[in-house]
Length: 583
Image 1 (cartoon, rainbow, N blue to C red):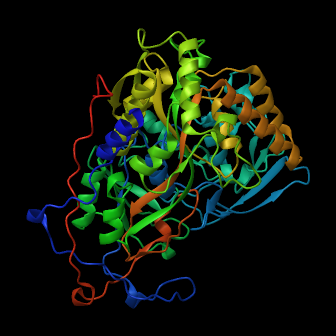
Image 2: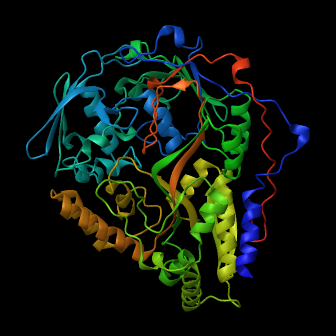
Image 3: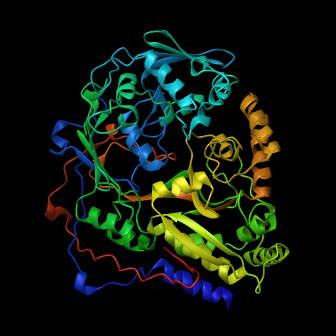
């Protein structure tokens, strides 16, 4: 009976994809682009649409465009357009020269020498120099900056001592050999180091602007950037407008002249704006509309693997989880990930029991033993552990599950709460928070108990995931501390033999999952709508898409692409029984 009720609940939760309302029937049209054959890497002028403006849905409102303090995917998307690190990426995600035209690596892998482009310019016309990078790396490492991504500088010589204040920032292993040569010294060989250098925390900032405007330097009219675009306008909760940087070294090959980013948290609203022609690109799509989108917008729907994990974080610094290993394990075991991905998320997400996703080269995700059990066996063990932890029908666990705004996040939270309620009797209060507040509460650990979390890899290496749980990592919102785990990660950082490094990382993942500070749910896929007339981008596992690579082509006549399209179904209200305080 429990399973039956749960299935009914989740079917309602997923929405009724076959429902239609004839009163809202509308005539739509498939957008068909002209065929384009590139000439020397560029489309012919006659194939280009006259208006080269890109409108991108972008999920949440960024909390800042300071590249050294920004967090989250929405900020990263914009910063990739505004700034350029020493390295960059192709449309497929391959590492290529960025602000540095070339580099040399010493035989021992400890010294990287970067030769900057002589034609690199800031958006105000100033040259981009080696001193700009030295200043910026020192700014990130300074304790005063309090960057959440400061851990990414860990491979650099003296970074640890600078971060803790034992050494001044000037002692960081980054120096200018001359006006256009930057040399970075590492404490130990780091195979993924070049991949770090296109992350926003390593972007250069314009020193004079920072010193003149302080914390306001990243606002419109004040932000000076070195990327393909510059910041033109920022209307909070409306849009962020970028325009081409006329001084960018490759501006002649940048076809999109303006990019508008829209913070749209509600996926149904985003879909409506896409269908009305206001957007060329959605951040996501509603989970319950997969079949409808396949039928009505097949040329626009793009679903691809993404190097990221969706999971629940547990605050180990507060009750009831301070000493509650059995309780944490019970909560993890009670979640049916197959139902979650098949009935709720429904876009091909992969059920996850390991923290790291599939797809990282030369690494095997380390799922716990119970991942191979049947769901019935997992639930029986969950009930047993729940009882050992001191909970049961007469003493149900009462907890809060926080998630940031978004339909899909709400659906997952409701489903998890429903499973906990029906299998264990847990009384869960769901708390919905705006992105900035959500991040702040996670970081402070004062009110959180269980919270939605997700990690999209900053670079294609297991360490990007594992270092999140290091006790000194600024993104360790779980309060997880295990000295043995820290030692393993420190050993990984210094290990040069690939096989040994892999074994150390796999051991670290197993150790961490045995402590259960996180509950993996599924591996991400990207699911969005993209105009077929938008060209110049490719699917890639990192989901990094630079506007400078894109361009719009003309579309065929309306008569050639006419089709009838029904309105998407109106989603039924999800059940509220599992939640005592969904807000």
